[in-house]
Amino acid sequence: MKKRTPFRPDTQTLNKRAEAAAARRAAAGPPVRLHKALADAGLGSRREMEAWIAEGRVQVNGETAVIGQAVNAADVVKVGGRRVYLRPAAEKRVRVLVYHKPDGEIVSRADPQGRASVFDALPRIHGAKWIAIGRLDINTEGLLIFTTSGELANRLMHPRYEVEREYAVRVLGELGEAQQQALLEGVQLEDGPARLEKLEAAGGEGANRWWRVAVREGRNREVRRLFEAVGVTVSRLIRVRFGPVAMPPQLKRGQAWELDAGQVAELLKWAHLALPVRDKPSRPGHAPRKARGD
Image 1 (spheres, rainbow, N blue to C red):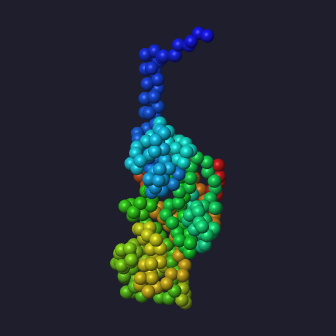
Image 2 (image 1 turned 135 degrees about the horizontal axis):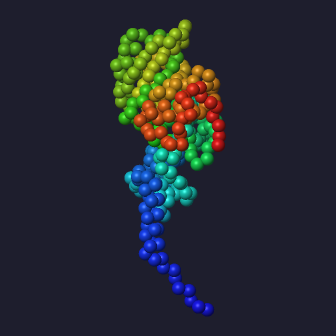
Image 3 (image 1 turned 90 degrees about the vertical axis):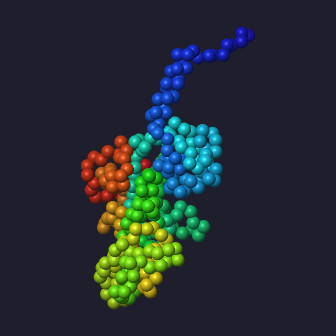
């Protein structure tokens, strides 16, 4: 049998292949840090992605990834052996949900005790993952924001941006002038000094009094601990606003709504983030619609 001669592409073919590869790299966009690219793909927060990389769960072009590595959409990235497709930022669709968390739910996907999770109520999506923006403890209710954009989540959560969170607080008993002044000027907690940005009386009678407060940090149980530090017990805590996003008055406990394209565009503009070409709003933001799955 006649032996086949191996195919050797000519110079013109090689040049065309090189040009095509260069075009693909250019179309893939500039390289970004791997943990940011994975977060933007909707797999989780940047901190979670850094942990995955450190644990050796991520591969880039067949090799174990390292923290700080840069990638773009032309690279073959796998997490746990499964391919993750990194699209250029301009092609990514940003989705945002607002959810009215009831008392008794945890902000976690897995719980050894089997307690109800806020993620149980969210619609399923393909090719992305809902990222919780901030947390609320099991006894706190109110506004939670979820997004598929790691970049938006980082802009809202990172301490350096000091995004304001507003709460409705019900306390037992009176809050004297000296206590109010201490809360506004700052008190010492076990993890450092803290204070309220705003403190306004909001009615109530008898032993139960309501206040509207705001903080610029996301420390664990910060509002409750601030009131405890001045000798007052919080009996109910409801988050009503996170940055520019307020909880819609018609949103009932356990209900999620998805922001429309106009509202998402306004939120990205506030965060100084580019609007993906896929998310061009059809009209200005209006009343939210019920969340849906794909």
